[in-house]
Length: 270
Image (cartoon, rainbow, N blue to C red; front, side, top):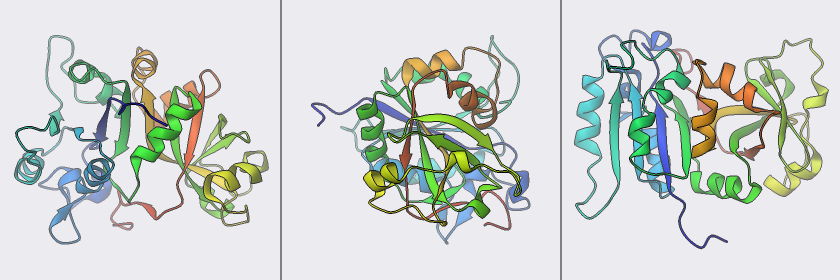
């Protein structure tokens, strides 16, 4: 049981031009695309954070950010005595760099100086184009309890669903030891099946054909020191480069999530 609240900040990845959501992103940033009437896509991860007690939130974006600024400034107003905030960090030219964000990892790397100001122990990385409701505080508890340097949220799925997702392999304690990006339908990935004991202890469910594999949700919790170390290079993408490079070299745990979760970053999914 915790003796004090961990110092954690959330970093929401706002994405690039939003070409997969065009024409909805023609005049606005992807996180500012309207959703369910009065809401915007970015409200989903922000709501998950605030309802989990995480009130220091950064949004990283770079295209058509005016509409996003307007929405954030008019919606998230914390009281004077609170240390909470929702702050947008748009791509900027500095003495160190004059380029756009080259990917998710590059976006975070270029803003480390801003994150240092919060003196956080943990960095929570969230996607800005997913629909779900999660208690991120539970995931943080899991991260701390395992002593992992990185924890990845995962969704139990079927073999048919695995083809379009990154698949995690782990031991009976939920410590990740392998990763496979979008396995082909005819590829044998049975060695990636989740163990009965881990599924039972995590979700109180039995393993069957509908939940025998674990898909990465693109939601990460890093120890602050670890994230800065694994970004001390020129890798640009978390999912394709950074995360596969960490697995097998550092202790990486998974947190099982069995609620509704959907990537809504395309017109079809939206």
